[in-house]
Image 1 (cartoon, helix red, strand yellow):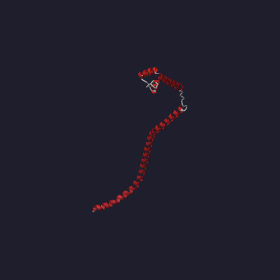
Image 2 (cartoon, helix red, strand yellow):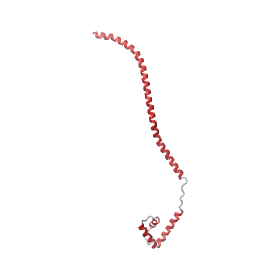
Image 3 (cartoon, one colour):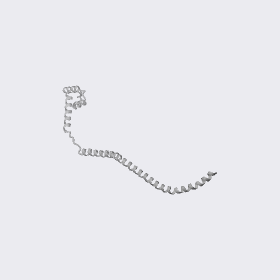
Image 4 (tube, one colour):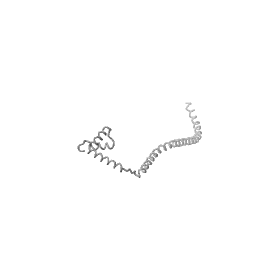
Length: 146
């Protein structure tokens, strides 16, 4: 390989099947003709085979529980975020209706209180008004004569 201008990256790319077809053919022809590249290529191929053969993927036993827990937490936060506006939207009309009823009841009580107190005031003042009016008629007549 010392005399070759082929790098290890090209051999690894050939093993991973990442080269275009025309470059792949050129590199395969070179490996067949160059003994140093052929040895290096076979060693790399054997190393890749050993790695792939011994690769064992063991899943994390807590992966499912962690994902499930995060999903449940996300659902709880989404539920709480959606519940508050929905609850407020449902309570608003009830509070408005209660306030309206309270205001109407208060106005009715004020009108009843005013009419009851006015009727007693009018009844008390009515005799005074007529008495005062009679007294003023004498004065008016006196002033009109002059």
